[in-house]
Each structure stands twice: as structure tokens, then as C-alpha cells.
Image (cartoon, rainbow, N blue to C red; front, side, top):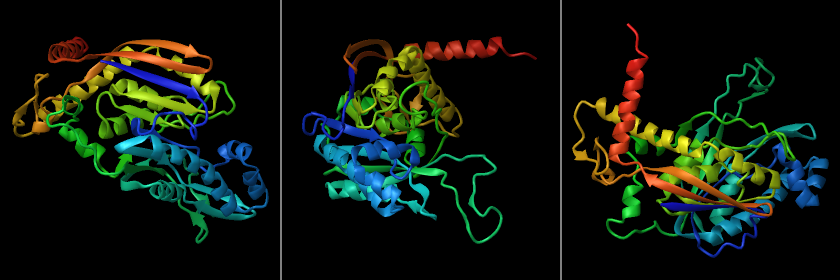
Length: 364
């Protein structure tokens, strides 16, 4: 299996992508009313700076979101019928002109997507707890003027039109199945895992605002199949692209920051090893799940040496990255990734290697 991936330096409000040409959107936009994004929004609309200087938070909030609206127009245009868009966004808290308040970014984004004809589906709350002792805001331990700390963001999910349909027994769909126990964890409305390192070594800003690869990787597996195209209009450091490579999907990404796009290739040095480790992790986790059940599941996987819970899982097949080829066109980057099926023989050998390694390090 071969997948292709393109990273383009440009405005995601005008991509040039064909109508209805992508199957899934996974992205996290700049968050309006978060100070690190003020310069970005102000550079594109003087009204943002004027509103902030005047202490008019409502006007600044709306002016920032109007810039995002142009990208949501493009998302609605390029998304295929039945396709899904997943938007990770957090609310903002800020003091302007001596007044502190919350700005509900998730509600404003969901309204914008709905106005473009996309159907809201149940979303997830991504909780990123912090252990900082000073995480409270306001008056500390005295009532009544303290505020709860925002330790969560939203993963909004919308669909274009009716649910996607597939031919009966479609190979791509059945090979793309997830395990029963993965479904139970992924399709919860509360996700709890940490963020990722935000430090940038170079570029126009100090922090990347990137999400961890687990987030787009999970969404890609939940809402697409092998060979689908995933689009990230705010691709940043390329985490969605990396996840698409690991998941065996094509991808396209846009970002205004050429430094971030040019730096993505450094993330691919160990991709084949990382891919293999991720496949082995999923298979080992399923074996552990099966071993912990009181009764053996009633269906056998076709490509692996273990049972599965449902008929839909029987044809599941995981692929690993075997090679990556990169090319450049000015500031833009393109990648061709080869994937090989991680079959039962290889999986069994990997499991045997793991057991041998554990035995070798065991002491009485």
C-alpha cells in the first residue's frame, strides 16, 4: 500500500483542492482570544487590534472568528458527502479593560460549522489535567471571586450530509476495523491523556500549540478507512500528517508558517521503527485484553493468531510503514510512504521476541 502526503505553505481559505475531494478533516485552529495568536489575527484584520486596544472583547472575539469562518467555508466545500470534520478547540479566558471573562470558542466554531450545512455529532471532551499548585485563578482560597481552571478542550465532530455508505463487504473498511475494546475507549465522550512538548527551536513564535499524535491518530482510525484522504487546514508542525502516515491514509495540510512546514521532515527519521512499535503495541494490547477475559471471544481473526469479539473485527489488518520518500517544491513538501501488512507470522515473531526479551531480563 502506498500513501501520499502534501504539506503546502499557504492560506487554507483558498486551497485549490477539488470539490468534495477529502474524506476527513482533523485540525486545531488558532484559538481566538488566546494572546499568543493576537499578532496572527491582527496582521490579517486591523479590526482585531482596534478592538483589543479599545478593550472590546466581544468585537475582537467575533473579528477573529470571522477569519476562521473563511476556512470553514473551504472545509465544507472540499469535504466529500458522508465525510467527517473533527475540530480540536479550547475556550479562552482573558482580562480586557479590567474585566475577566471566558470566551466560548467551541460554541462559536460549532455554530459556524452548522451554518455551513454540516451536521453536529456527539463530541468529546479532551481533559488535560495539570498538577500545578497555582492552577486556580482569581482570589485564591477566599470566596467568592475565584474561577475554575480550564483543564479541558473540545473535539467537535460534524458530518457532511448522510452517513457514508460502502459496498457490502468492502475490503478497505473491514481491514480498517478497530478492536472492540478500542471502540469502547475511543468512543467515550471523555478523553484523558497529556499534551505534548510545545517548544519550538526556531520560527516566528516560541510555542507550537501542537496536539499529541494520539489525538489525530485516534480520530483518523475512528472516522476514515485505508486510502482515504485526511485534510488539516492548520497543519502546523505536521502532527496530523504524521498520524495519517502511521494510519495508512493520504493527507494534505496547509499552514501559513513556512518554518513549521520545512521542519516536518525531521520528524520522519524513525518513522518505520515508530510505526512498527505502534502496530505491535495495538496487537499486544489486544492479546492482553483477550487473556484477561473469563471466556474466549467467539471469532477468529483471519490475519492474526488471536480471537476477536465481533464478526466485524475478523478481517482487521494492521499495516506498518516500510519506507518514506521526500521531495520539495520551494517551501512545499511532498512525501510518498510505502506500507506493508503486519501479518500473523510477523506478529507472532514480534511477540516471541518480546517474550524472549522479558525472560532474559527476569531475575529470581
